[in-house]
Image (cartoon, rainbow, N blue to C red; front, top):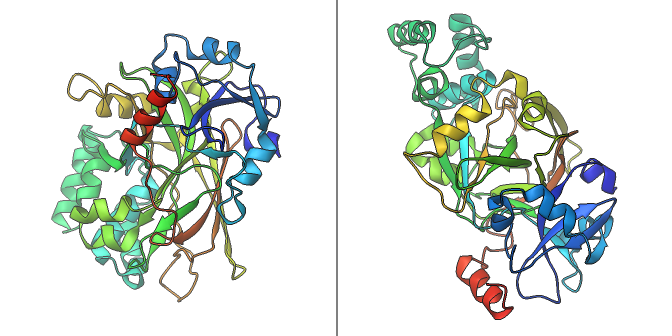
Length: 384
């Protein structure tokens, strides 16, 4: 199981809840074992990521085992979690959690359809056919912000089909929004929340870059940017309600740190696989090829952090997805939507596997442990 959750040979940092400690532990995993590496030098994952050489620190700190990765992963499943045993948490803590939208062509077209359909899934099929007939379904060679992109924009305006989503998809500036506050993301095995008022919700399997406060990209994880398509489709001003709900941001299982074996080039080549299995027997699979992203990951990071916007504790940045499910689940012509109980698995051969089960957001474990609680517990443990 451990080899399935994270690939061998990587250098990893993450977090765990342990019954013997009030504060979350900073952890790493190696050869199927999990080690507590919390210290005054690294009381948080943020502190590890801000180091000049986080890989060297993590590799030198493997001397306090707390269990096997199989044991922690098994106990991380919300339905069977034993609070007397350690479990995995989201592998980021004080970092801002940001996300980029409309970074793949398929996602771009689907967001336009959402907007034009005004959140009604039954209208989406006809709109999809009309839009594809007009501009095609392959804009992969269209450089955002270029003269060619501007020509497409003008053609769509003339047809009355221009959209704010096309603006951020092929215009000069990408969409970057706040997915959730620091400390609010959930990790491997936790339930992920869908607002009970939504009738059209989707998983969004993504690579999540972890960026230090000075803009260095230090590693990558996997994320599920749970999205309410009906809310966002009704109005882009409802993006916060569509994206940021209880347990709606999943990241994990670990952050794989960049080293000579795993670099930003590996991220650019990564394939992100998705499987959804419902209690009703429904199964859906899909994938995102990072090679098809319309803007380089580095450009998305530069759009999020720099002289124009500082993040002293760094950030976790979802890179977007090309996966946009259109197959019907419940009603012909209305596409896919989540059911409570869906098991969502997001996998990358380079990063690992993130698994979560869908639940009504009001029934997921509430977010109660924030930054103040973390600081108090670290101070009590004389770690800060």
